[in-house]
Length: 551
Image (cartoon, rainbow, N blue to C red; front, top):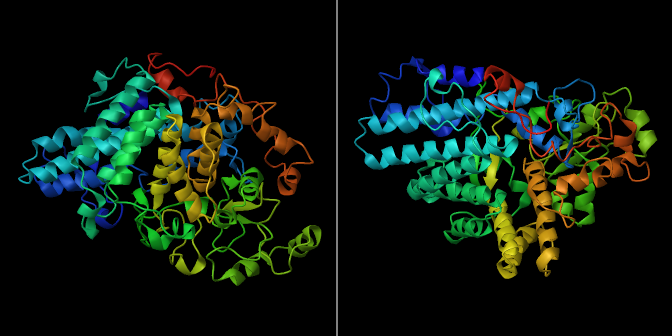
């Protein structure tokens, strides 16, 4: 709990830094809270700092657990087989993740974000802001962000300490974990209050684009309800988003994650990134998930599995496949007009010709070195084409907004809620709208067959966007077990697929720098949640208790 003590102790000064566009403000140094919030400008500046808490302009604070969630699913490997990693203990379900630095950082920085929001919620009402509408909007933004931070915690850890105000360290001594239901109720209340006040997307000026909207609050509320199987409430919230017609699907799936389509009509909530040659105002995941032997070089963490590729192929989904995966041996990359640069980079490898001969590839293909990349595949969604890359191509520099919630997700969640309520006509309509954009035919099924189609569609449409783990943890399979329990474990279908030579992918079978039996030690009594960071339990003197199965 020392982290919670430290976070609560950050009351003498708060650093207020912007994130992008409407958040691009000069760093104003350290401001004492006793003399801050004297006018509207200071309140807005502080709120910008709350947005900054989404990622803290870095990759190791929160991005790592976003990637970890995909690594713990059937969609991704750790990927990088030339370096050791903290990812192993959790992504391979080794029961030793209590001291994992990745989740410790995530826990700490999510609570730091909550602290900032708590300060805003308590201090802004006291500020002498003449414009009451602006004051209420800022409060609503803070409540949305606080709800989002708590949602990030509860879906990963279950019940967590619920700090609802601006507390001194001695006021949280002996704090315990709230029940998950209590945390969810708190999140719901924040989001409903935010939705009642926040402007629609169309109500913001271009300079404020990226601030949270009524649609974002309702969309996230729908997801919060969905995760609790509150189907009626989820359907109502999501239908409201649809009916208010502020959002729509982009015509082309390839534009969804394009750097040219930040804050598009499909985006409900995005982390705002911009390029700056000096300051860390950009994103990192393009580099972190990029190939180690590509132009600019990447870190190759979180590589797509052949199991995911097979799901696209089995569905006949070539459109989304090409915009989701880049595979070694390819002769083109969707949206890349400088493919020759990638070929040239590949040919610098001493082993280039031997790979061409071994795998029977085209002599001018792009090779993602199979000896360094578990699956020899990388994520196309976070990829930025060469001619759109910034001058300084590095972590914290990439101007590709990170899409947290988009309209396709809203449609598929709505379809799921309707199907669970035996309301299959609107469920099919919403599902088929997403499928048609991917150039796939309509689904005519109902009942359990429709449920399976919706679930498969979520995997394909939202692949590598940090949804899969939470879906397979919450979904019940036909045998009554959670879906993840049938994928992982000694008899899990994903494990069998990868450990049987006749079904395993050639690259993944040959490269055992990361073991192919990922998931074989999965324990359904333990691995439906991540462990509470051991440091927090130790420093709380036992008032915070561990999740079941974690020693």
